[in-house]
Image: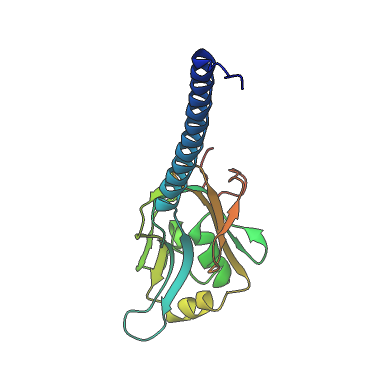
Length: 201
């Protein structure tokens, strides 16, 4: 019986080829794993700074310390960057809180100009780019003293519409309206004609 001659060079070449293929496979698998880990880390980073901005209306119409206020409460994990803020009453876009006070009271009360007849009020500007940190609140409007005005403001759930569009530091955006849960949107659009407060874009 003839003996086959073992070709050690061929075996060595095959072993080297298999080793190279295995190394390529391992490298591809490692690259995929690293890519998946990077995506998970990026998603975790985005979620760790996600804001959740809610519009709240608070009031007390009792004899002691009566007030009505509008509050933006960030219940999320990261800062909320304000891009658009609007207020309307009976379908008409408003430009300032005094317009709201005069409209709701049918001209009886005012918090600005020569007709100002309320002492207990405070306003805070809300320009585009305003940042509301996580777990903090921002109060753009508060009025007190006049219980009839406060009762009127508190009863305007259908007529008084407040909305805000905000984004995270990563550019993910949401829109909140009145006291409903914020809904994700593709982006926030600044509109000078409807932005509450004469702000330039």
